[in-house]
Length: 129
Image (tube, rainbow, N blue to C red):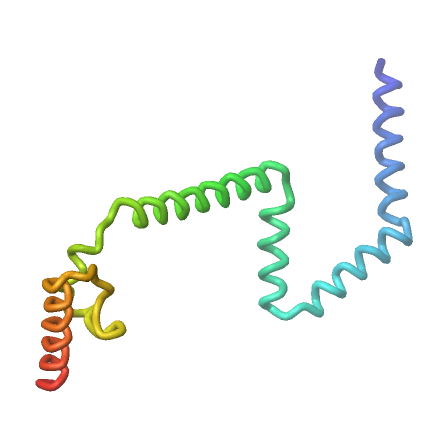
């Protein structure tokens, strides 16, 4: 048992030594370092961040689920705002009166009057500055 452990240790050391003196690995390592040194600081930052996030399976999975969660948040928020809010409170909003002569209103006399009143209020407010 003891001699086989020594043989394994010697074998591992021999493989490590051969890998360290392998000219192809040395050349590859030197080329990688040379290309890294030629990068601009922004490219280096992007490279390091990408290597960090894409370097392991766990980080890729975490990034994937984060992106999916953010998309679901945007989709659900967009759906909520497009289906659950009404424009009724916006009809008399003074900050929106300048859009195309007023906020898009239903074709009612009261709606048009509200848009005209808001437009006049904006004109008066900007004239008094």
